[in-house]
Length: 190
Image: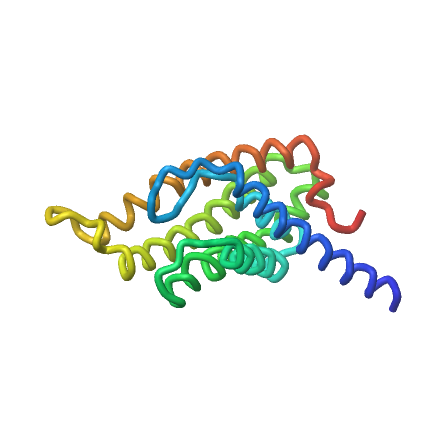
């Protein structure tokens, strides 16, 4: 019974530390857009937790980071936009955790190609779901930025893709390099 409690406490500590690490990485982001969005590695700790511990832990880490962003001064127009762009968007990044078991299996069997594949697919899924939420939010709340010849959907997509694609690429490359070199980072039963 004591061992189970230890692992629950350990996981909670990991989630808390990695949520704060998201905030720290966000401080070193490239913010070039007036209405939010930045090129950064803020998603990286969420992916690490998701790949180590699964969907639930990854989603909780993203949710906590989103709430921390709200507390630390997010760009807020109203409560619904705030919920979409912060807690929900980052909680969905944790959906990469659905590939946790596949990643654990690839590591245990020494299948580096499969490991890289599942890391790529997981980071793509988490980033894509976050992007979709940001596009929906932008279509609803930031449509004033669209010009007369540009649809709101095109504006929202171009704006959000402009920082999400570089963030996805940068995060994916770093996570693949990290986990290829240090597979133990992903193993939870050490």
